Length: 154
Image: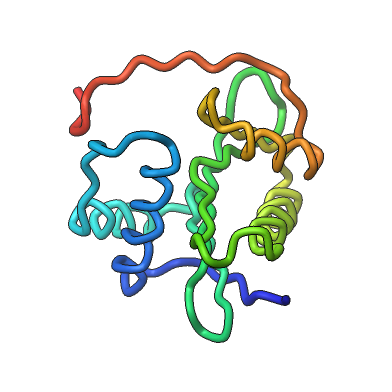
């Protein structure tokens, strides 16, 4: 199945919120607050930035997956690197190659941007996601620590 991959717009807010709800549930964060307004505000901020892209996979015009891609510079690398912040496929389309096509498009965009690497993190308990990334050439290279400041930051 060949998907159309495109960059998200503010008009995609509702379907993005639905997909993010599935990601939150799959990650075990049932009480994680995410609202349509938050999605819309994030998309507005991202629309004016080349540093962040939300890629959507469409099957016959219907959005069935998303990948959030963050480009950044670090002191450690001479070229930009990228981070996959989110990857979620609609429940009914999992196992059909949608994630593979989103990853392939992300790799293509990263290479075009001159990136030296792509990083991704998953929940420690999400063994299926870890295996998916290994199957697509990612290796376990580091340990990620996190300090949360709450849903509104600060």
